[in-house]
Image 1 (cartoon, rainbow, N blue to C red):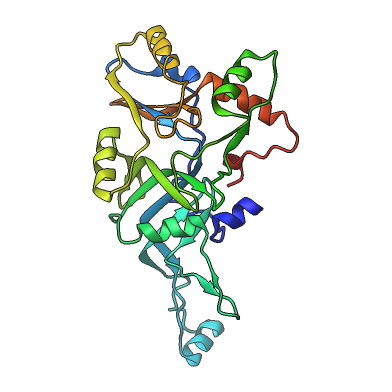
Image 2: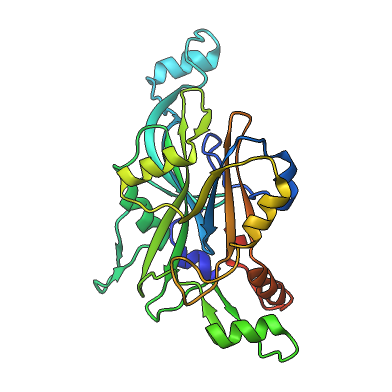
Length: 304
């Protein structure tokens, strides 16, 4: 509840033609299906919360007012020429979390009776910042990192002092007893990184851009994409690919050396496949597994 309040906005029923942020398939399960010749873009997976914003053509029912005598004739059944339902289309900026619509249209901070300003939540701030930037039918999907005024993030991991665990000993020695996933975001601010852009046609079909086209569009928008580690053409050697990704999935974040990488995202661009897979690093999985065994642990990625 606290995390939702901090995010701001008001959760609404989702919009059918605004694709939700689904679960990302695991690389180890999808590896055999990657076609030879596919362009693979390997990016760092950011440990944040997901968001989406689109400038879409929506529809809503129109409220029609008729003269009393026309409504009377219709009720009596003597004149049935009133349409049962009429809808109008309009263009609107909408933003959502993984499953819900959070912001629709621009909002301004509220004012308390004593004149104190009620600040907007970070999701509404992000939404406001994108109004006027997108093309009609365009939707961007991004990772959000929020750092509070005290310089801490809601994404962090405790590294236990376990002398029998070599991985924990090594991580604790390098990063300390608590690791904050800050990604060099200054205190009291937020930042987003785009990882997908889609264009929607008049029939409501959303077509994702290739990774390179997405990066070019993000550059036009002046928004960073998730950091790219490698890009190459897949030669169908699955064992070699698995070893290659294992060698770069661990280590410090490329954006902030004060914490580890969550892992990798594998973007596949091919005529028969266009998808993204995730491969989490060994150290991150080790810490996350310990955290999820704690009854008081709440995963911020699962609350939206």
